[in-house]
Image (tube, rainbow, N blue to C red; front, side):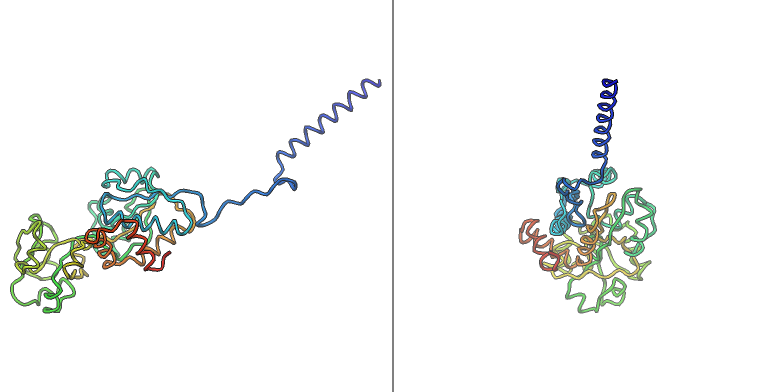
Length: 308
C-alpha cells in the first residue's frame, strides 16, 4: 500500500514537472528572461536592398545616388548588381527578385514590354507603365530628368530666333538643316515626322559622329542628340521642348522588384523630385569632363540638394 501510494505521488510529480516545462516553452514572455529587441522599423531594417545599374556612367551615377541616399536613411545596400549590362540581362534578375531597385528610362522600358505602345508624352508613358510591367515589378515617382532623343540647337541660334519648342522652328529665319545619324532620315521622328507633327520643313544631313561639330560650325542648325549628353552643357546648347510628343519620352524612373522596406520608397521619391534634366547633364559633365569618381559625384549632389 505504501509502495503504491509512493509510486502514484512520484508519477504525479513527474507529470507536473512536464506540464511546467511545456508551459515555460510555450509562454509568450518570461519575467526573468532578458528582453529581446523588437524588429527595427523604417530605415533601420536589416533587409538588404540590391541596387543595379546599366554599364553606362550616367546610369551608374543615378544608381549610386539611390544607394547613398538609402544608406543615409539607415538601410543596408548592395552594389553587386552595378554594371549589369542591357535589359536582356538585368530584367530577368529584377523579375526574379535578385535585384531590388534599378534606375530605368520610362519610354524605353515601356517599349521593351509593349512594343506597340502609342504613348508618347511623359505623362502618357508613365501612366501606361503599370499595366505593361510584369507582375512583381512596379515603378516609383518618375523624374523630370530624361535621357532620350531630342532636337537641340545652339544657345545663340535659339536666342536669335526665339526658340523654346520644336514648333518654333517653323518661324526661324533661313533654311534649316537637321543633322543626326543616317537612320534618322527614315525614323518616324525624323524629317517627315517633324513636318507632320510641327509643320517644320528641314533638309537633312547624315552627320553621324560629327553632329556636334557640325552644329558648332553651323553647317546644320538642328541636331538629333540625347538629352543627357554632357556636351549640351559644355557646348552651350538648348534642348527644344517637345509638347506634342514627337519623341518617345524617356524620363528617369526607379523600377522596383517586390516591395521595398518601409520608408525606402519615400527616400527614392525625394531623389527623383530633385533630379532635373539640367542636373543630370551636370552630373555627366562631372564624370566625363572633370573625371570625378561616381561615389564623389553622388555624395556632392545629395549634399547640394539637402538629401543627406
